[in-house]
Image 1 (cartoon, one colour):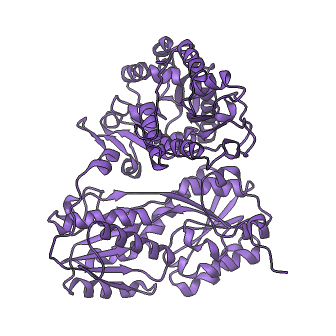
Image 2 (tube, one colour):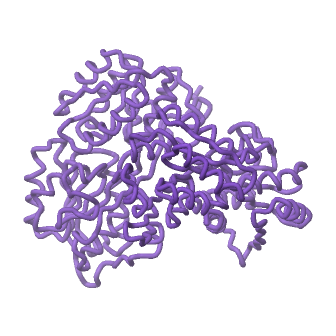
Image 3 (cartoon, one colour):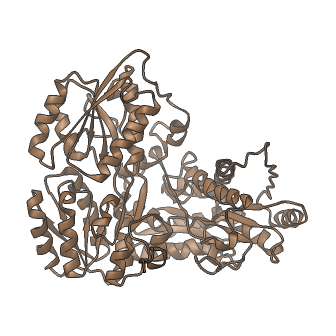
Length: 625
């Protein structure tokens, strides 16, 4: 279950910091078995034992131990808590020092809004959703408040039924179904989670699906679920505990923020039986746990952790690899390094048994067919393509040599296949669809009065068209006009940006359009002159003058592409290797631009920060006297 996953993650996080159970660390585990009197007894027992540190998982455990540890006799690290600020233990805000000095941890507020947005995409006619919750649970109340707000925004009526204990869940769910609920939803309610079987039973009888924030229930019949990856949450908590044990971190200095690595699970067997529902393909591809139409479960996390075993370079053989990319681009340089590192770790060593030939088209699409055709006729063992235009060119112009692609938003939109499993026989690779929903949410936080959002892109790039289509859906739903300007060459970018800002837009957003990023400095200049924020999906270009970026890290997908290549080199046909989607969201801010625009970044944005381009004044070096 989720608690066991998080516990295992805590031990991994401790080990990452050098604290190994059985070597230099003794771990004693307690389980209250969902019984609050037992939890209180355990808390008192722990308080009176000579433990150096206490880790609690779940909101009730945080509250129970915090109640007996008010005077700070034990250092306390917590995890698996939906709403730390509403838990009643003295955590007032995200600011360091705004909580008890002996208490620290990470919140995992369930992605309630994202879950309902996914449900609305799966059923655009969704009008009524029923939810059961226990008002005595602070985390459940917080999730319900979020659910009410997003349902109102999406035009969904949220039908509610409250319960006091798990025994009342089945009757409450039956009442919601009788009131016309088209789906049943449960969030971070521990009382309901214990009786999840009752929710699924009521839904099955009513022939409606279950959506939840508990991905582990997909095999039991929950159709669409989005929650936290609790192994990763546990690793974060364990690493924090390890740093405290080592004396490198004072709990009082910790900023308590939400850490919610997404975990999607779907049940295609249930979805098939629901005529009004259709799970979007990108959601299915992002799912880490799937139940297929025949009822078999596919755990992609387990597959990545344990197999299939990736073969390494063959002894005594030399390899020639071709690399093709669109044009000079710091993001692509990072991707290429990720690929080479991945291959090197599999034994393909530059200068020893591996030779690379790298070519780019200098941003000119017309040059790509010639480059790919030349590579295809140069006795290469493998061709690697970076960016969508290069993949599109390889589909038609590199038919003799196996192709592995990466740094691509949407390989299906690029024409590489009809699905991730049914694709062109000579290629495979890894897609990384950008976080469009999260980007829009962050733009709206930065510009609360947002009414007109501008964007600039090349309409001949399939990756951009796919992302723009998604943004149109999002902006329309929120009553924001997406003002679009298209360009076909880098020479048109600055003029196009000037024309766009002249249309009184409130902000300008550029996705990873390969044409536009070649001239992103011109776009930034136009935004600077118009005094409007520029937001990107490409972190490497934030230094050019963007306020912030919410995008993807392409190192890990490219690193993972090496394993696909090695399987092909050892005899697996590319057509037998499904495409993968690997997305690692990265947030980068530019304080220098923020100062110029007199903008203050939201705690939500800074809570997910992975990089800073220009530091705040207090961190920048003083001028020499």
